[in-house]
Image (cartoon, rainbow, N blue to C red; front, side, top):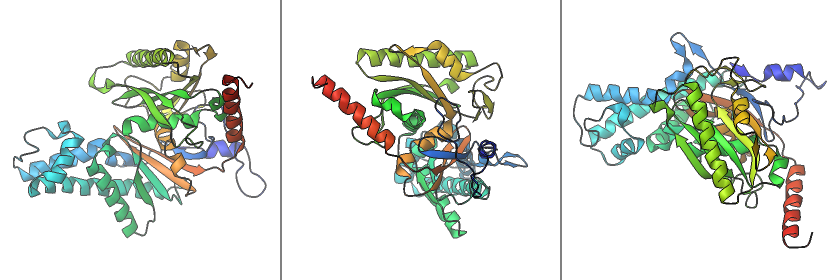
Length: 389
């Protein structure tokens, strides 16, 4: 289990029995204290006899259950046809749920119930741990949640937990699964950077897909980054290919360089910052200590450092030296929900994909200093542009 307890212990106490809070770390990878939240835990890997508890609720678990129920039915259905279960799209499964014959709908509902039970089991185990205790809400994201059938499974899991007097809210992440992990990267950037720039580069690395994009901050619409949106998106399904680690990095670099080129062509104010979400336990120097087993090649080698590789390939953006900051992918995807979690103190995220990512957060008190500085800087730029500087 990766946690921030050791980091807090090193800083000692405050003399009142509470751990001292470390200041936000600028440019430190996998930081425990970010601008808006403290990362209490991430990449928690609870074990059971046959492996990791989280594997019960990975993406493949739903399709394994649906395949089993199709085998039990032993009947050809109009909408499912002869398509192998693993090749069924989320849209087709939703179509069956909405318009299929009763026996077809029963297959999907049976798989939903199985998956909801496994998801509830994983959450039950997490919520018993010290780091996840007193969690009030959990956002559930990842590619699977784009399907309505998955949203129903999440809601059913919440009901199962409430039936056991476990009071926790489960909510699907509101942004598109392809975009949430990019939008969350804006919360890794130092707030002072927003005074001069309108967009950042973001990367979301998964076991199947690598996404890179330009995220528009939209601070003129919402100063809490709740209106941040993906302006441009590049997606590569590296999982469909026999991709080596070096090829994956080269492909990612090409995607980022193309985005920088497009930003320059369109006259965007692109910050010299790349925010990266990557599976695994991320060390302060940007190395991956564990949990990268679903990525192509050995990403946990002590001789490999992804942020350094990206900086080496893109050392500057528009004449400014590049800053690369990397964090666990579940943390980054969870950060996309931070502006909408201000009504609770302790919350978490689960990301359903090739594996099951997780992170737990505690909100930090917002300060007006950064907000005021950003407004002053933006006002100054407007005055100068209008000839009033």
